[in-house]
Length: 151
Image (cartoon, rainbow, N blue to C red; front, side):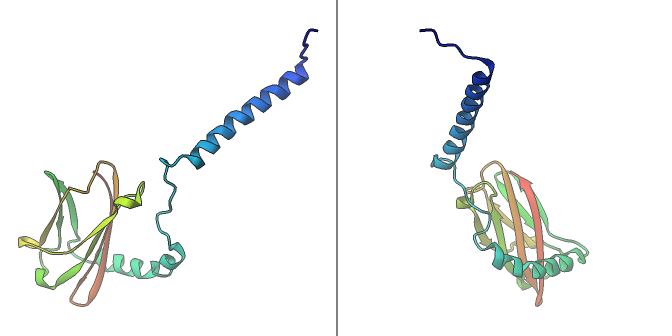
């Protein structure tokens, strides 16, 4: 007995093979434990409520004569705050967020040294994109600075 396939059956077989091909990619992307699927923020509805506060803080920072400067130095990240401000009055936190992997996110309290400079060692900073958010206060006025960098 000879198996004969006409063009109609060939189309059905080709479509079935294509669907199996696509579905195996979908299954692999969902079932593979090496591919972590997570959101940038677990509480994004709650974060939305504080978004106007962030906008106000960033507007305050944009009105400064000199804003925060972020530079990559040798094996460090250097943050330079406005020189016309007293370093003992500046307080806040620097947040380092890795969009591709929230497990390596971290933050540092602002502790300024001479010339309103803070240096963060790069023991946790791996190559790639980082979202840096500096939330700080000076004389009861709140400021925020955001920058995306490739380290």
